Image 1 (tube, rainbow, N blue to C red):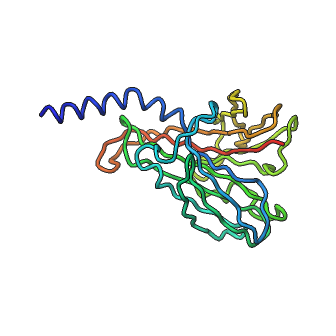
Image 2 (tube, helix red, strand yellow):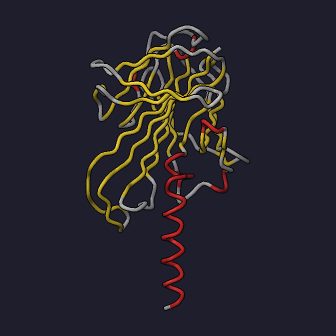
Image 3 (cartoon, rainbow, N blue to C red):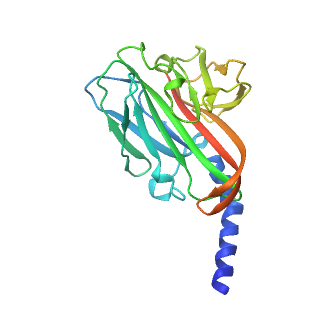
Length: 241
């Protein structure tokens, strides 16, 4: 009896103090925005707090987060499933482009455990331009339910406006809140217009993170646990030169 009571108290303590930290963290894809046919392209998956440059060690990821799916969608819409390998502070995978156009890298994972009464659903994507952008350069290539995209991610430059678009459940996300995090941790909240578009002008070089979160009111059973909402997060990294 004491053992069960101790386990319950331990879990309650974890939920009280760890849940806020979990929500502050995100999964994201890191890869070069351009690639070359016949040359292996490195894909890295990180988990942590981007704004604080706080990266969680790969063997410390919570629940079953490491079991994410990772798929590359070619310009001609071929799907390539990747298997990622755990390194010190990230997971790593490779694919080799064999056609011109824009490849879409898609990561998704719905966490096994229900936190409080909420299901956590992580999503991330990246785009790799190979040769030209005549095919695949659209958010529609992303198979995740929630996504962010920029058609000029390969030419992002300091002091030049970057335009992006957000989507949810196969439709553009109107009046959705978007967060942009600069390389130094500076954050700005934006809202999409009636076309699902947002824009910002980077004033520093380096990696920017674009985040789009949506909480869906839905109830059900997830791995034997009741829930009443699903929290979805999409991330998209843009490297500014």
